[in-house]
Image (cartoon, rainbow, N blue to C red):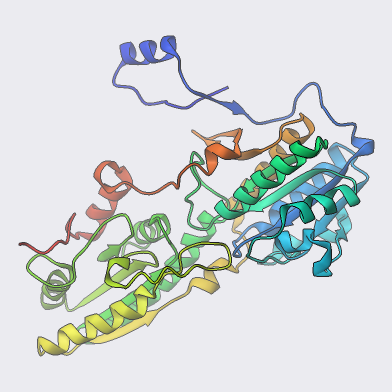
Length: 405
């Protein structure tokens, strides 16, 4: 078992917590007894949602673990996400073998392709039954995991024997009770390259400003980690920290002071930041997520307008590397991490676990219910976050950029 809480105020607090009724996660890993007979298993793999570094590493590790360790005779990859589980879509599964996946980790994206959008649960379970799938590995984010839970519920209703196991994939690192998701390390490492280019552009021109938009619909983990890794960033705007644009103490005034004192500035804005400046039209994307307005272009225009009004000439360069970052192959750290996640997903399925997600907590791999993972979204909490305090020390930006009333 993996203890949920590992930091206590003292030894007495630790003892009291453990003696009362402490919360544990189940530790992932192989079990002495397995539920499925490997010779009877057809395994399925599906990748859904946006691209993320490391998907191919996970696919490869799943195939290798299933084939070599458990001797599973048949492994099917369903193309283009949950769409590939719907027969009328016209997609047919691909049989995956070690030879076919041996070198796929050298490429970004997913060899199975991906898609967004809701599919009929009945149709998907029909397909699983048609091909005799006994375990389905769903690689994806919040929406994918909700889909996996719905598939599990239909499987349970039909009394079919199919294990549904999720492997959380989100470049934003915002899955609940998962310490980190695969691809996150690669994503912010790649983002640093764009940030450092913005810094070179900014310092190479009079009153230069480099503005970089990074991923982060609801959470600022990529933005903050990229800033900490780069050490060339002066302002980070994230969804979890409100900011005003104009007025004493607001962002644009603080930015102007920085430009006057230092002659240049680098700004990172997460895609979900500052959405209060846009009208909520209630639009949603194919996955059911709220469609966000483009805060990057908005900030570019507002900064330019403000300094023009202040009669201060600036040289502003705007960079949006989002699709470059999410489409690259995993770095070495993420590649290793992907392998462990996949192996533990296979162990969980063979142990008879279903409606579950493999993750990591306190540096130990865990298995937890999908319902817990999707109960709420993990966000950075500036008021009590050591990560945010480190960011403030690195950038020198004020803790709050709210206009004085």
